[in-house]
Image 1 (tube, rainbow, N blue to C red):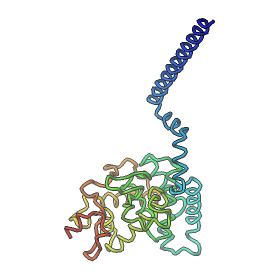
Image 2 (image 1 turned 30 degrees about the horizontal axis):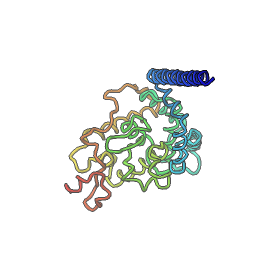
Image 3 (image 1 turned 180 degrees about the horizontal axis):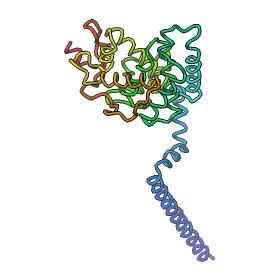
Image 4 (image 1 turned 180 degrees about the vertical axis):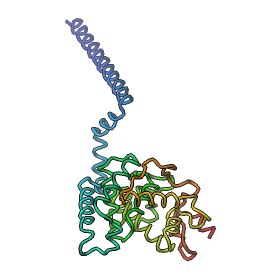
Length: 294
């Protein structure tokens, strides 16, 4: 009896161990298969990551600190408001000068279609970005086509563009230097919010144009070349794009493939924005090396 029980226990133990081995083998094969699938289809990795309880917990912990991304509803509202502003541009409440600068809804649509084709951006997305630029232009009294030209040359209309030195978003704003300008827009993390980035970038641009005394001087300040003899052609590229957009806005047939194509800021010029006078404090400079030169 004892011998039979011993044999039974031994068989049970062996069976249990065999089952565990088979289970581990199955799990190993499943893991290898999953890795293979993720290698073939990278999007599956994000789906698996989203299912992780650690990812969910981390997102919940950071939820209060992260400003909400620009929603489709917000951008659509911007688009509708700008369209309404353009429609009533010739009516009361808008000066003749502002009306001429903002143009009509039809002209804005021409600009949108041309930019979408030139920079290969979806029409709806381009419409939202152009609408935000026009709305900002109306608010701060700056030519929307100049804003769009800077956006085009700076980022190619990529709202998530970021340079090696930290310039971010559509207007390639040095967010760490101008973080106080983002305080009312959700903080520095809003730098990649298209609407916030356009507004802050446009305000900086307007300030530099005013301080420089001309659009050309303002662009040189914007690119951070104030301490240099030239801006390596940055201003020329922006102004060339600006002239093309003005032609587009008047209904002219402007080729979308124009040489040279828009390029990001050259690395030799891509320095933190320089100052216009010697009285500017060192904290306002983007590049500490510039302080020593001054």
